[in-house]
Length: 385
Image (cartoon, rainbow, N blue to C red):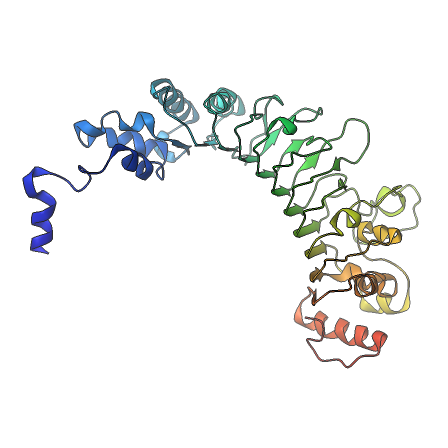
């Protein structure tokens, strides 16, 4: 211990003194912007180092006191930053307290600054508890240099984002947003995640998505209408969770399909093409979940009624073939209408290796027993798990 202390203070040097500046900048890039700026008081060498850090993480904390102070801090950092220094990442958060007009006032200018610096990774996260979503013009987040874009609680207008101009974009993550992604996504896009968001369309109820380079796709709790998935030839893994927010659900009972009311869009509106399954048919791994509970398994056994959102079952009439599918996870929707969904996957997935039904343990046992009887195969409590 004594020897290490001698080494640390030998010649009056600290352990960082011999490190090159680009290494120090890399270390600083893991800190929030406030902590990065505070390092300027450590020594003369550190005085201006914060001005050229390649990653900016503007995260609000109670230490700022209010949104006005936080906004002033961010504006001052951007004003003093070395203009010729590269900016690889920028994380923009809004202040969680105060009025929307103050919390959101300068965010657009911060995003424009990052894009003007040819940022590669951009994350815009509006902390929306008690706040409205941030509204941004469609062109603000468009850049040929972006590789990773994450948006949280951001709204755009109805016209499509020009994502085809984002020629290097590989990862797109949108959460709690209102946005029109356009019909065709860039070939560079590999990973797409859409959660609790509304996909806008100018001329039709459903937005259409075609993604020639997409490898992974997550769609969870899509607001309003579920999008039509078109060409996705590179898709390997996809997770789809349809929740109560979807307009594809029953308007009358929320969990009951075939409700008998012809005006119910969720039960009786028919599409002239497959919505989800045809676009997912080339995937290797699938998770297809409808968050609707069964009222009683007796109805499942003795009636043709559907107790779930019907979008998956509607798609089956197009007879998609899952020629590459190896693993699939399904829940109750596949057991309605005499096991239509389950049988389709068993009959149209020639190389299927693993089928999982996601229920509580008791439900797994009951449904596995029913399925085993239906298919005339031996049954145990985990037959299909």
